[in-house]
Image (cartoon, one colour):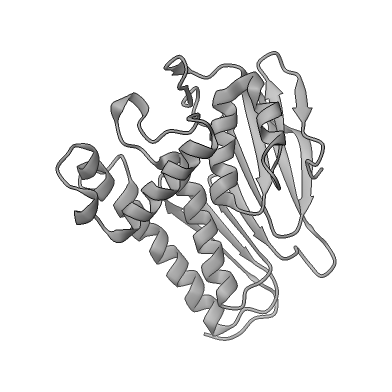
Length: 251
């Protein structure tokens, strides 16, 4: 194993989706070890939080076969983050869809951000980590050049509605394009239908991912709500195909 000056890319199938890692610049042994650590950690978190695995800690907890105290410590940490997300979003983010415990709306963004942090702490300061379309960007794409991320139209994946430019930026999108109508409006108990997609940007992907899910559930109310969230911006496509964006959206 040797150092490289041209960067490193890696793709991993985990958490029911594809994680892409793009490390720019010199790649040291420490950075390679950190990438392996990040990938192993993602698989470990999948085993803990997967709602599709009957033996996962979160599935057993949801069925009442376990308690938080008997779960890995990280479960309590994530549920605490979820409780805070529910408070901040006024209940539009919830971990109990249909009466079943499911923190997936927070876990993926949180996992991407943590994997990105593992790389950063190893010395990889210019990185792109993408987990199923939710991204944590650190540093730059190249010296003096920000990362550029295309935002696809929810009805036409080969058409971009915007290109986001940024350094040290998180980008999260919630919508119907990939998983259909999967976000529930807690006011009605029915799938949210006011928006086709919403993309939220900010510093932390954990929060941006939660905000995107909650804002999608809010529908028309998302525009005024996101304006009250310091450091976070949004761009949305409405059900009738119109677009709107907050004043500071980075495109």
